[in-house]
Image 1 (cartoon, helix red, strand yellow):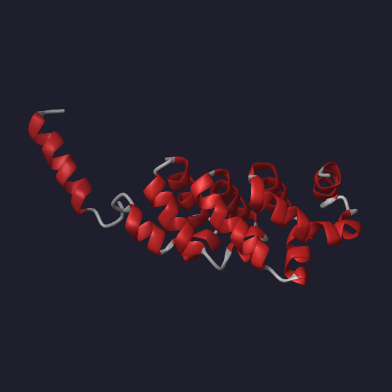
Image 2 (cartoon, rainbow, N blue to C red; image 1 turned 135 degrees about the vertical axis):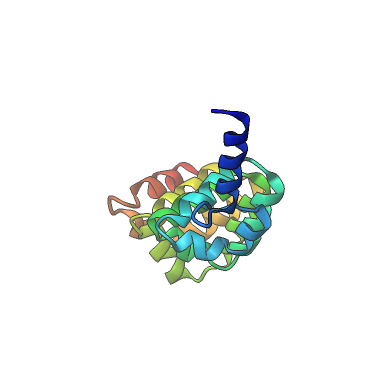
Length: 161
């Protein structure tokens, strides 16, 4: 392809409305909640979280605050919340929300087909005081975690003195 043809091609691509521009981290964080519930949008959020950009990850976490439990009960949302838990800076935000949950809401989360994975991840990655707080919040519910979906939670809780 000649040099002129290449420039023409690039100019068409830039003006082509069907080719979206790359997402901007601030815009993505602003729309993270909507994207997280979308079957395809949640993959965009997961991809950005995998970039390990602390500022962008934190902005997404703040944007999703107050929705971690509900998101955890969805297929795609579960992966987003787990990725946030795995980062110390954002994991504390998720665990703090779990600690603020009422008993019934936390029980529904832990027994949910997707949410139980989030609770297991929280128990595995949370450190010190927050870990102890989470264990203390979950232990009274231990007899209710005998289902196949929550058995790992029960095993972790039983292993903690």
